[in-house]
Image (tube, rainbow, N blue to C red):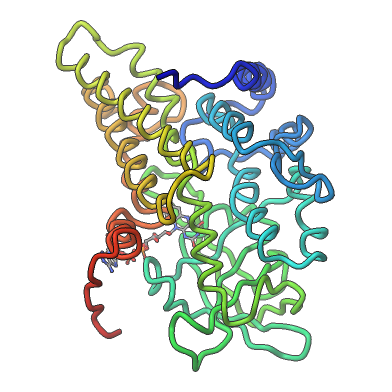
Length: 378
Ligand SMILES: Cc1cc2nc3c(=O)[nH]c(=O)nc-3n(C[C@H](O)[C@H](O)[C@H](O)COP(=O)(O)OP(=O)(O)OC[C@H]3O[C@@H](n4cnc5c(N)ncnc54)[C@H](O)[C@@H]3O)c2cc1C
């Protein structure tokens, strides 16, 4: 069977590689570049090539290109370590949700600026007492005339310190059962009453935050979808977050660089290199099933489990290849420093976007139809 992409897509990948060579001379290249590496200038350069909102309708600034073309562009950018954090969050999650659930005015308002690479977004979902258990979110939005008044706290909010907008999941009906009564609001991060406090992660980096909302006023026209009925919408958004190539290749650039110095004459190392490359190929095909819409419902959870556990095995392989050199401490430039950094960051792969255990529950209960484990009362 021939798994290679058609010639025109391979040419597109060449074009993206050339672009990245030029466009990252002043911005640099990074591992985990869709989580950690932000450059507004790079966002604009990407947009100028038409590589943001690629599949969206032209009337909203999109390019009406195919899902496979978008896949090729993203895979090539991330493999090269391009700093895409700012641009791809809204491209991956906000755009598709607005196209499906947004009003015409919301699409006109936000999609063109996302496809021009001019706005940065964060996702305000997790809270100190509601991470996996999204249904128990307690940040409230109380209707007051033509505004909502938001109070509460979010945590682990990636990029909130640089975001222009927050896509906020909040409780609009405190009396409804947990899964009902939730809504989604777009909140201007410059609004009075928002405080962003950075959290330092285990690598020493500061990419996520706590975000506090105190009587933050949000116009009702920023409500996306039906009030009190956003749970299904939020689950849909998580599907966009889970099934893409970004979940397979966060440390692909590091993997290739480590392969280049690994002693491939050692049979144990050879064996591991072959196993990881085989896994990578399988993961890529799983992603392609999602991208080409050939996957059954819930398959994005299966993809995320497999692909992120592969990323963790890559991190572990890299630290074994580098040996004691990787204990020198994290730095984003030298190979030992990058391996050290990745070793410390790797546990996050199976936490962010839904933990491996939660996703296994989803696969068991919703995909395979296994009996549900009774939940303890809260
Ligand atoms: C790098 C990074 C970036 C992130 N960025 C964002 C962001 O931008 N926006 C955002 O909203 N959130 C973000 N998160 C938060 C992330 O979504 C949550 O950490 C994740 O959903 C888990 O929630 P929690 O941390 O509250 O853990 P908990 O839900 O408290 O889980 C703790 C442990 O218990 C297990 N567990 C919980 N419930 C069950 C169950 N029913 N069955 C079996 N096991 C269970 C979990 O698997 C986990 O091992 C980010 C996290 C990381 C690491």
